[in-house]
Structure formats: structure tokens, C-alpha cells
Length: 262
Image: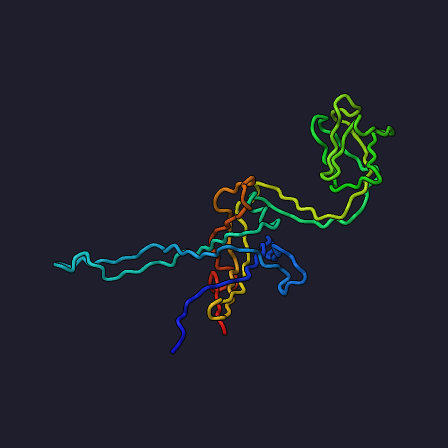
């Protein structure tokens, strides 16, 4: 007698962001992962289906047959997917800001006499790098004159920000030069408010924890946006739910496929 088919799936869910040229960028790049893309911690993955319009043809014959259906059908509908994510790598963080994200690996280095414009002496001046080294100390010049720290300016080494001191030598519109060294770091830039919806390629390496049966989920194209508000200052770790339609991508026959095997 066959076992009762009770299901309890676990899965390694991987997201790739689809670029305008059709290429796919791993959401969590990892050279040691078989797919080059580390699974993202996912709390839930839900599919939903919204039925299409109903078609009904009714009889106009006399008697009890009048207005009774002689044909009825429902047009194909729309398949959607919703994923609640427990971790927010930079590309997913960009989704929360409805923007574009880019990540760069910055090698250790230094700059000498790099030009910096001071738009307003009342706000911090962002330098080109962060995680500046304390030794050798940064050197700030106005023309050929070296300015004095804590007299003309203060500098936040971690954030790479220079703040003019009131009454010092830095004024609105000044052109400065800066020299400093900086540590290697990973810099992620997110330009918010640019794109509310993004396309993702999603896979799931699934396992039925009861039967041990394997499954392979593949969603060629899901156009997702953030569902609901995100509280950045929540007392709990931030979770994000991405939701949107599954698209029948070029060369595909269905919005998603699932293959089970054992």
C-alpha cells in the first residue's frame, strides 16, 4: 500500500535579478555555491491564481430551457508569486527603496590632491571614499595652504565626510584638495525611487522533509515589487515580502514549472 502523500517542503530559494539586456545578476553572489548564487533565507513562498473572465452562453428557447447555460468556460487567468524574505542583501534592499542598486568592491588605496567642491559650508562634504585611515592623517588644502583639523574642519573617517567648522577658513563655494588613504571595502549604492518593479529569475531546490522526495522549482520571470510598508526602525529584524505576476518569458511554455523526483 502506498504511503500517504503528506507534504512538508523545505527549499533553497535563489533569486537572480534580470537586467535590461536579459542577463541575470545573482542576488547573493557566492563563488563556492554550485550556482554561484547563495540561497536567500525565505520564510514563505506562495502562488496565487486570479481566474480570467467567465464566458457563458445561455439558451433562448421556450419553456424551462430559457436562459439556461448551454456553454460555460473561464478564460485563463494570471499566476502570481509572493515571497517573504528573512534576509535583505543589497539588491533586495534596493527593492525596499524602489530603486536601483549597484555594488562595487573597493581595493585599498589612496588619493593625492583630489579636488573637492564645497557647495555649502553648513553641510558635510562627502569624499569619494569611506573607511579612511587615521595614519597617515588626511591632508586638506585650500589652494597651497594646509588647513587645520578641529579649527577649519572635522573629518569622519568611517563615513568619509568632511565638515567645515564655523568661523574656520572654509566658505561656501570653496575648492579644496584632499589627500588620504582608505581601507578596502564593499560599497553598495542604492538610488531610490527609480523602479517600483523588477524582474527576477527564481529557482527552488526543494525537498519533501517527510518522504525525502526532491523537487526542482523554476520561475523564469517574476515581476516583483514590495508588498506593504517597511519599518526601517522596527524593534524586530526587517522582513520584506515581494509579490507580483509570473510572466511566460520568451522561449518558455508556462509561467513556472515544478519537477518532483525520487
